[in-house]
Amino acid sequence: MGKIIGFFFVVFLLAACGNETVENELNFFAAASENWRGEMSVLLPPPPEDNFQIEITYVYTGDENNSAQTVQYNHILEWHDSTHPSISSESDVLPGAENPKQITLFDTHFLGAYEIGQKWITEVVWFEDGEEMKEKLVFEEVEDQ
Image (tube, rainbow, N blue to C red; front, side):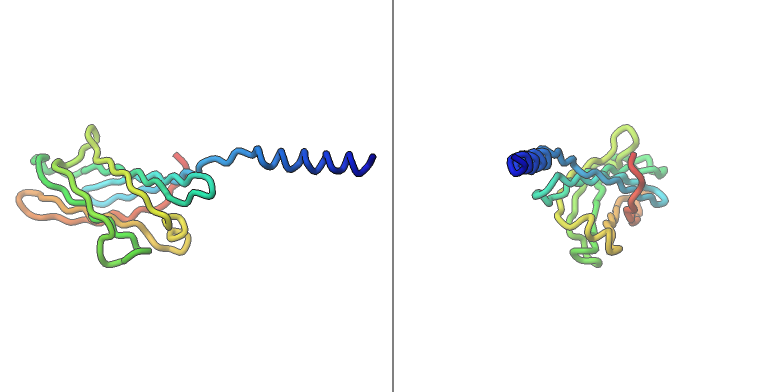
C-alpha cells in the first residue's frame, strides 16, 4: 500500500512540474547622447527558444529643423565585431517624440554578451546645418519599466 501511495505521490509531483508555466524574460536598456536617446526592450521566450526579439526606439533631441533627411543607424554588436556594424538600417526623417524610429531585430547572443561586458552600440549618422554628424549610443541595462 505504501508503494502505491509513493508511486502516486511521484506521479503527482511530475505532473505538477510539467504544468509549470515559463514566462518570457523581458529586459530593458537605454542610451543617450547629446542629440539622441534610445530605448530597447529585449524579449527572450522560454526554452528551448533562444532567439531574442529586440525592439528599439530612437528619438532625435537636437535642434535641426530639416527633419526630411536620410538618417543611418549602424548597429555595432561587440560580440560579433566591435569595429564594424553588424546591422545597418535607415530612415528618411529625423525621428521626434511624436514619430520615433522603431526597429525590430533578432539575435541569439544578446544577454550572454552583456553578462561578459559586451555592448550594443548604435552609431547614428545625420545632417545638421548641412554638416554630417555622428553620435554613438551605448545601451546599458535599466531596471524593469
